Image (cartoon, rainbow, N blue to C red):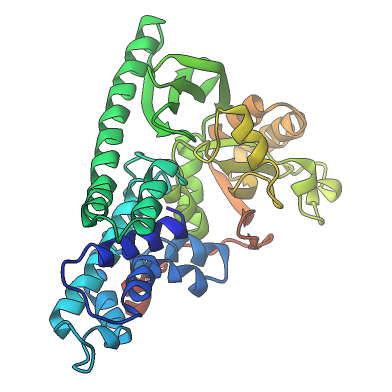
Length: 402
């Protein structure tokens, strides 16, 4: 969820309290507490750190009381005896922890994925209830803040809305998922997995992502839908990341493993020419050696089926696929297969995604180099050798790093 909504939720929570400390810092401190878990972005320098730390340990249910304690110490004006109507320290700690948990809830209802069980699990909770920016969440909060002197009931209703509205959206998501499966089955198709996501201006618009096995391999389809679940616009197809390739990458690289844990129905495509490494070895590859293959992996989660929203998103300074992983691959064949693979690699290197992916998926792959790029945050690892997964140190484990 966006920072404005987080901060506004904290301000509304403090204003809704029947007895709050008579300090001019009370509302700003509550707003700060409700936005504080996103301090994790300041701790991440590399794309891997960003992937593991953002919505990571500061968003963990187990870390919330500790962060609440720090916030209670920072908000000393709320419990100092000199402050009229001051709270006890324990109440301040409880309130600050509640603001952290409120932040976690508002992040869990989006599609990004929040690691609420760190350090014990990197599983990402995503309830797919609201778009990353949802005016139906933000505007009631801002309205309640503006009118707080008139009626305290508005503040209480705004707080309740933070749970009622996502709950309704979760129910609508389940209904749309069932409707999509029923529609595809009626068309004679057999979807393997269906994920329904809120589009901009949800609950009036939604997007469905679904994977399907085809004669040419796995595919991932994206379809816009209206509030009634009817398709709107064309169905967009992309090549699904083969499970064999995903396993090869995760086994050889901690970066790939973390990225694939982040993705939702990942897709793969040949790497565009302008993204190839400057020292592309294809130009100097020995005639009897298989040329490396270059692929780009991402998912279709961050987008919109609405033309106006799509146009606005393309106006971003760094308009691009927000999160992508790129790999330089070479086949890891049995000795007797080397000549055949070299010939296949040379023939497939300039063809479309399907044949390239089929060739890669048919044999174990050796990861030569990798690159992870997040366009919006301008984080780029550039091309580098992979680092195999290893057991983390105790400190790394505690904060969710690998």
